[in-house]
Length: 368
View (cartoon, helix red, strand yellow):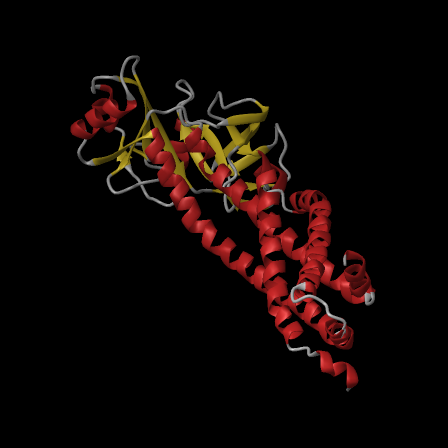
């Protein structure tokens, strides 16, 4: 039966190529969306995940740093330092200034932090070194590639001229990228020296983060206090709410288009072979013979399309990253399995739609 299915499909090679190409592009789109989501979900929260903090303290009602506004006074640092069980307290000032270089301008998510404690700094340095002086800045690697900036180059934020000393990874939040400077530099750019965004607190040895969070909440009832795991979950939730709906809509549209394309091809093949199928029924073909034949054709197209998509994926992603450095992709075998499962479900559903035509074929049509 597989030989006959292959012969039916290859009878119109141009049509088959277009259908397999459409299937491959739709599967490629699924893989791309999954890889984009994985990169966004990791890059957006990697700063929080690798912060090495036990407790985050923000303005009351703020729940995250991605889409919440938080302003705290520098006087809160003394309050935190007096809480029993607090080991290290570090200020972080986050803002969205415009960075200019090489005649171009772009917005960055600028983090000012205390270099002495290390809390709030870049999660990973890919090239160069971390911030050491007021004139240093660490940029996200993809942002630097997009702006054509290299180590040692100078960039400007407002009146501050900064030298790029390092490139970080895990700091690409897709729509915006992180940059890092010393707290004094961030204050000069912000213009309000008595304001910070949040405090990162490290527990003293022997104090659990949960207990430390409870103590800080009692000492600072006018602030929002989160342990590391809760704060990370809050930021992941914000990321999913901002990105997932868009990806779901695009993926749904691609799936619907793929189902329509495959259903049309299978239906056309049935209509063109209507007399052949009538002869098969006249000769005593089993009840399930023709439906299985259609399912087999759908399976062959699906496998060919998925094979083409898997072959094209990495070259296509490398090309996308070369043209748009700020777009990062993170792929895995789990993504490939999920795309294959969705494509298989689409193939089965399309075949079931087309099989209705097979049931409308009667043996007596042979004599028409």
